[in-house]
Every structure is written in structure tokens, then in C-alpha cells.
Amino acid sequence: MSEEYAQARKAGNRAYMKAISAGRYPYLPALEDIVKDQKTAGEKRLGMMEIPIDMIAGCCERGRNEAFADNYMPILDEQSEFAVKWGRLYQAQQDEGFREPIQAYEYMQKFYVREGNKRVSIMKYLGSPVIAAEVTRMLPRKEKDKNIAVYYEFLEFYQAAPIYEITFSEEGSYRALAKALGKTLDKPWEPGEVACVASAFARFSEIFEERGGKRLRITAGDAFLLYLQVYSLDSLLYKEKAALKQRIQGIWRELVLKENTDSRQFLKSLEALEKNDGLLSRLMGGSAYTEKHPLKMAFLYDGNPEFSGWNYGHELGRKYLDSRFEGILKTCAFADCRDRERTDEAIETAIRDQNQVILTTSGAQMEAALRAAVRNPKVKFLNCSMKLAHTSVRSYYARMYEAKFLMGMLAASHADNHRIGYVIEEGRYEANANINAFAIGAAMIDPQVRVTLLPDAEETIPDAFAKGIHILSAADRIKPSRASREYGVLWLEGPEKPVNLAAPVIDWGKYYELLANSILNRKWEAKELTGSKLSLLYWWGMAEGVVDVLLSERLPYHSKKMIAIMKKAVVSGALNPFAGELRSQGGEIRHKEEEMLSDREIVEMDWLNDNVAGDFGSGM
Image 1 (cartoon, rainbow, N blue to C red):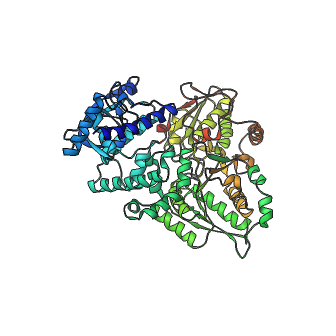
Image 2: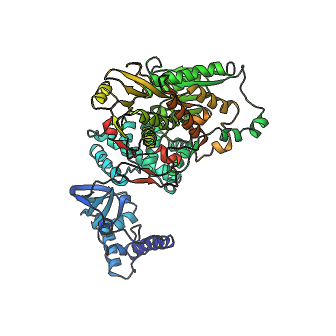
Image 3: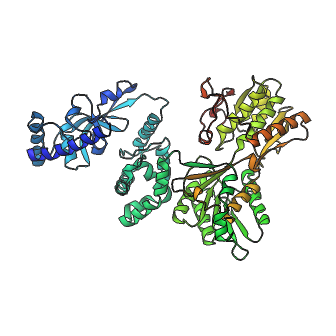
């Protein structure tokens, strides 16, 4: 069997030299080295199972690991005792197979061999996908660490669907996978369902790796989840490989985007559009749209504009477009697109009616927009959200934190006891940035002010008044189901007497006018905005005229004057709530005095300012 060992050793030596050249540790990782500085939370015996050989990362103890390269192929001399034992085991496997399972520990979704390293090496050399093992799970202690959070979510998933091979890099992905499959993690899935998912993932992984997936910094599981957001699980089971290759090729730009965390482009001003106008438009002869061939835009709402303030605002914006561009632009609307079936149906109808632009006005509609965008690359898709990044669907939202910043100043100037309440609205994408901008603005007027987070409930106002809170930042929009005064910054004259002082507004008519102009004038196709690795977010605010603060006539003139002066400073860029030193709850310095948060840091903000009392559990 020396010939077989020699071949395996060649593979080991190649891996060894490759690791040395890349500056990596060339031997198998040892679990004892990995956990020596880690806190663990005990062990759990899982018993006998077949484990994926590709998920065996190394051995348990240092010393045994240096007989192998990091690909589990042997590297010791062919005349060594180790080589002789390896050869005997190889022959035994050929004659009758291995009867005894290996002994392994599982830690953070990878396996480390305690007994049976040569057997693993041989089975890996033979190309076997699995090996029998007695497994003990070593649990990491729960800490504020993304990888540990992902692992504990995997344990929840494994209880429902015992599949080790599907790994993710982001928290929430296992729940998202279950949702994409119409399942939950609350109870075990049927064995047949588990087998189908495992089989579909294996087939997807094979094609993904053939396409070059291993060169990406995302897992095959990350890519699999994105595929399922566009196509069905059944397609992976029954479609021919050529068709699947074409589909994976179709979403490749999205997969590349997932690994490039800095690839998001924020279009915050009109200057970018204006500088990209000119040559392309002149060469193409201006707008391609006429009364005979108008630009057709479809709007999808997740509710009914008659009962939803959010959808009503977008509907007003749509109607403004029809009047502003009469003749060369036509719009239509689809209400109550709350679920996948209704949203997909509305998009199909809009495409069939030859709409060139489809705007989905809720982040919950992004998956439907993505599915349709991949299949209809000639149609322009937009989604009104901030945190959902794709190349096939452009996002758009308003910099509401600018208005909240000014409203915080106003609120603090009227608070008579250094206390302000802030109602958390469920499902708001920019919640952290808005709360912090409000709190920072308030602290600039009153350094002693405390902003207390409150739930979005009917009893919030009387409860707040009873607790001595007389200034309150309520919902941003009128809620048809409640009293019309309960929005914006309120002065509570009594438990049932809210008085409006100010309210933030988004002028969706102006916003959609700017978007429509960018398409009519061919600015949409500008090279700077169409990079294959870019995710574009239109993020306009006060300077573009789409965000403002409405002030009550009851405000004293000096309050109006203060807001007018501060607004000019915000519009000019001289004043920004996220410039200078920033401190979160507990006093942690988030940014030093000379620095300013980036657009991405604002969008992904996951902390609350040091003068904010409570957390999201206070309001949701």
C-alpha cells in the first residue's frame, strides 16, 4: 500500500507548501489551541451519526496534527511507522470497510477528531463524503459575538432539521431559510422534508463551487438562501443542471455584492445625477419617452392608502407625478400587496401591462422585487427601504434623521423637567438613527435631558403624562385609527390633551419627481450608477427638498427662528448630528471629536445615545 500512501503524501505536501507560501499554519488546526482562551458552556453527547468529511476541520490535540497537512493528507516520510499504519488501515478499509466509528468533538459547527485521524485521512483520500462518528458537542459560552449568535441559531435549526452542511455567515439566516421554505424552527420537520432540503443544497453547492463560489467570501449557505429568495426549492431537485447553472449565473451579481460589504453606494445629493447628465443624454437625443410612448411606472403598496398614512403619502406622490409629467409619464397602483402571492401577482400584471419601472413601497416587498428583477432585467425595480441591499433592485429612502435632529432641539426647548418621551414605531428601518439624532439634538439644547423610549400603544400618552412626561415625540404620521393630533412632537396639556408642536414630513411627490427625472433624462444608466458590484441607495433629505419639519402656529416666534437657523445649517452641511464625539448608553465612545459617522455607519447603527433611557424592548 506504499503507492497509495505516496499519492496521498504528494497531495499533503502540495497543500503544505501552498499554506507556507500563503503564510498560513500548514498543519491541521487543534481544538485545544482554539478553545484555550475561549469560555465554554459544557459538553453534550450526540451519539453515533454520519458526519460530512468536508466539515472535519482538524484534530483535538496538538502533536497528532503535525502528521497531516491542513487538507488531512499525510506528510510524514514513506518509511515511517505512521506510513506503515496508514497503509494497513487503507488495506483494511478496502477489504472489509471500517467497522468502528471515529471519536470526534463538534465545536462551532466543525468537527475535531479525538480518535481516528488516519481513518479520516483515508476516507478523504478516497473521496468519501461522510464518515461514521461518535460525536460530543462542546458548547461555547453565549457572548456578544456574531459567530456565536449564528452558531446558537444553528443549534435551533438543527433541532428542527438535522443538516450540518448548511452554514451561514449572518445572524437571522437560519430563520430566513425556514421562512423561505414555508417552515419555522419551532418544531421538527418531517424526515422527507429534511432529505429534500439536504439534497437540494448538495446540488446547489456543487454548481455554486463549479462556478467559482469558493473564491467568494460567503458560504454556500448564504448563496443558497439568496437562490431560494428568487427560485423554488423544487427547481433544485427537478431542473436540469444546465438550467440551474443559468439561474445561478443570473444571480451572480447579487452573490458578489453579498461578499463586498463596502460596495453600497449612497446617492445623497442631486449633484451626482447632474454631473452624469450631459454627454449621454445629448448623444441619445434627450428623453426617449413621448406622449405616444410614455414612461409607465407601477406602485405597489402593502396596505390601503385610505387607511394607512404611509401608503397615503406614497399615493399622493404618485398622483403628483401624473399631473407633473402629464402625457409623457403614466402611473398605476396596486394596493394591499401584503403577502407573496398578491405581490407577485401585482408585479406580473404590471410587467404584462408594459410598465418599465416598478416601485415597491415596503421593505417586506423586497424579496418579490428581487425575484422579478432577476427574471426581468429590462425592467427597473426600486424598493423603499434602507438596509436591504441588492444590485438588481435599487433602494430609496429619506434622511429622516435630519428632521428628527431639529425636532429633538425643539422638544428640549419646551421640556420643563429635563424629560422627553419617544414613541418607538414598529418596523421603522431608520429607528436607531432617528432616535439618536433626536436625542443628540435635545442634548445640544439641554445637556441634562433624558429621552425615554415608550411603546406605540393607545395608552402611551396618558401613561406618559401620569409619569411626569409632558413633551413627547409620537408617531411621525397621522394614524387614521387614532386621534389625528397624536403625531409629531406633542405638548401634553393633560392625559387626553396632546397639542401638536411640530411634525416631520417626507414630500414623496418631490422625491418621485426626482426619480422620474433621472429616468426620463437617461441618468439612470450612468456608468457610475450601474456597476455590477454596486448596490445603490437614493438617500435624499432636506437639501433636496424631500424632508422638512412642519411647525405649529402656536409655537413662539423664537422657536420658529431657532429651527429656521438650524435647518439652514443642516441643509448647508455645516451641522450634522453625527459629527463630533458620540457616546452610547454606558458611556462608550462611538466616535471621537474630529470624526463623523459614515453613511453606512448611520444606516447600520445598532446602538442608542447615552441620554436615551430604555431599549427597543421598551417599545416593541
